Image 1 (cartoon, rainbow, N blue to C red):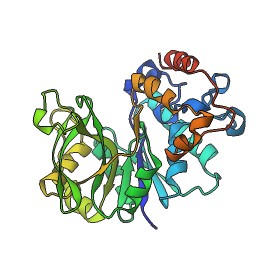
Image 2: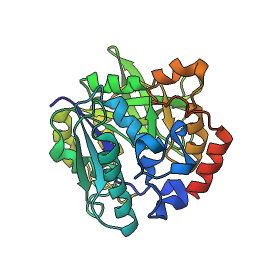
Image 3: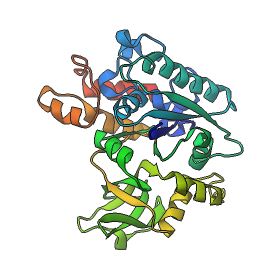
Image 4: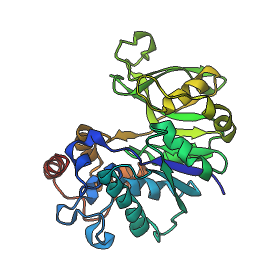
Length: 313
């Protein structure tokens, strides 16, 4: 098998507010993209042809299937009544909506032990038995430019997509330098609260982690067992794996072509409407890998914001 893409879906999605506690509300990966949002048919079990229920995990699968030969979706082992129901929604959605989609690729489900191995690196450990060679990893709460999938599917190094922002406090932040034709990550800080003036670029911005990775199989074999539970968070963190790669000069920074974080209520409400399709801008949005439906993109942005604010609580 060629390269696989891992999608982390085991989290509770607490940053989405009250909806994360409601067993009847879809989990974060099943929140619909703006141009597919239909408040009259907001049901992940409805017929996709009737409801156009197009969650952003579906967008990830459809865009990535042209570059990857298979997917590993990491879910959580049963541990909580509400979350167990939400995890089953994800499996049901993929089996109903994605399987049978033209060009669909094999999907394996891995289950993370949230009690023994919590955290993003715990999700990585759960996926190990399914990995065959180098592998890419993407978070379920970001929308990426389609070129990211091409670059990460083709790259033969440990790498991370790096975006730039003016305020890095909500993101993992990188210090990057040019070295022999590659941008190499030389240091990183997770969500820095102190001013990192020396890391500021000439344009006044900072390089931040966009949550899309590629890992060499040999590096995972060598480093994964060295990462211990983070004493501050009590979890196994993917960031700590990145730090080991940074120490050995093995992590390459790939410049972002387009990155929309929608992992919180505020980000979803602010960023999702930016994907609204306009006839004059259709090539732009298609180039960003956002698969939109003709005639279903005329919902007012204000209506979407009101509906999503009500849904998220």
